[in-house]
Amino acid sequence: MQRHEALEVLSGLTNEDDLFVSSIGGLKDDWWNLRPGQSDNTFSHGALGSHSSTGLGLAIALPHRRIVVLETDGSILMNTGVMCTLGNERPPNLTVIVIDNEMYESVGRLPTHTSGNTDLARMAEGAGCINCTTVTTLDRFEVEVARLLDDGELGFLVAKIEPGVKQWPVQDRKPTDGVEDKYRFIRYVEQLEGIVIHPGTPSK
Image 1: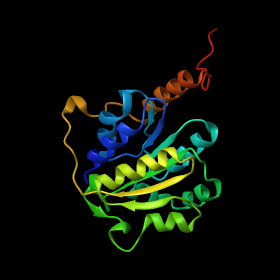
Image 2: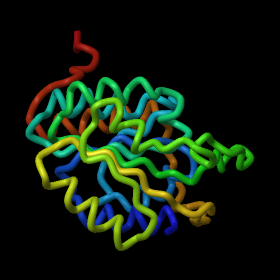
Image 3: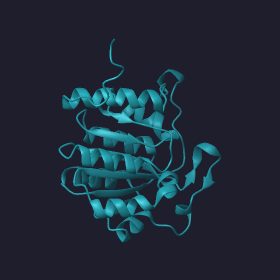
Image 4: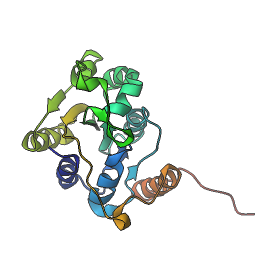
């Protein structure tokens, strides 16, 4: 299973009313091109280890809306403690999908611990998370994601993918950084929810 294939399936199972938090690396260009509606429904910042925490906050703040975190093995291994918080809070509208290629592919293909004996799904389950599973095929990924998105419970899915980065044309690569993403995402949520989150600079 290739990453862009899995993300294409995810895009078909979600819509513009869902909100996403995305990790970085090769994932960011794939999701930029495949996200549903090509809207600003995704917050992608550059701090590894903070994506599930951000998604947890969104899920608690917006309990009526589906929140999907696109994690990576390298990112969540930098903040394994978040699994404990997820396991205690268990927000029913949150689905965490860990895209696991067992390496830091974009910075030299250095192996992560999941290339050895580390099992992220079992770690999450031990931390109190529910609906923890690992998939290795695209068919199984589609079945499990569809279930987790609509079961009204926390979900933690590890998708084992093959190494390899899809080479998007230059014009299709994600042009924005985390700072711009933050404000575009805020404005999108404000429009979606009919609320004011960040009023900006007051006029004189």
